[in-house]
Image (cartoon, rainbow, N blue to C red; front, top):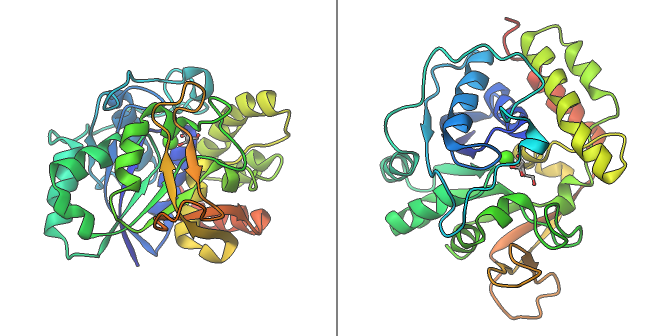
Length: 314
Ligand code: RIB
Ligand code: CA
């Protein structure tokens, strides 16, 4: 059983990740924290509420976090995710709002309260909340079981600049704090996600689930892959954040290597780059399991769809 806090900036691929985590009997979602990323923090919190309620898990609490990265301005990407961040479905308004407590405060309290080594963090956005929590209460580093994050790219380069992937580029200082925290970290970078595009036409298979969840996922998938298919000239796109949850659930489908990874925070052309010492030339500590690729994408998406089918048919 994985007991997790999910830090996220929904985002269609974040939505799939949340739904997958909520559907899986192997995951207990203790709460959802949101951050400024794909859209504003108020919008990501509202989006998380709508996704939880669609999945029949309105009981799970949402906590809004940082309104901007530590040193840099927020960098919403409506051109990728749409004005709402989860375009592609006509979402019912959330019945309940986010909690009054700040995400960083709740994250720290939860990690200090729950048994040490029991709770993992799934990080699907710029890592501002995680970094602030680690600075606010350094003791949580020794209590976090594992951080699984979607972000970065080395062999694949970046998706926002030639060197940088979005989640890391938006807040590279936060990512550097997290990667140097001493916590056990699993990275699901573009190297991995680009090896696992969704099956072509997967939207129709999602809609065939015959549930609002399936129809919402089909619509989000259709919207989400437009931008990437145009940019990369591909027939389908990977659901980056959902693949990170897949890596937690099904490590048998992924290959990678523990090695030293650090963040470039000052390069004129390379700010936000995840510098992966794959050949261990720096002599630095292996601080991250860097997943380089998915070994069976067809099976990965089959399992994802099977999990999504568990969610209520409402
Ligand atoms: O680069 C992909 C990442 O950036 C995903 O987390 C996506 O949701 C966006 O936040
Ligand atoms: Ca995201």
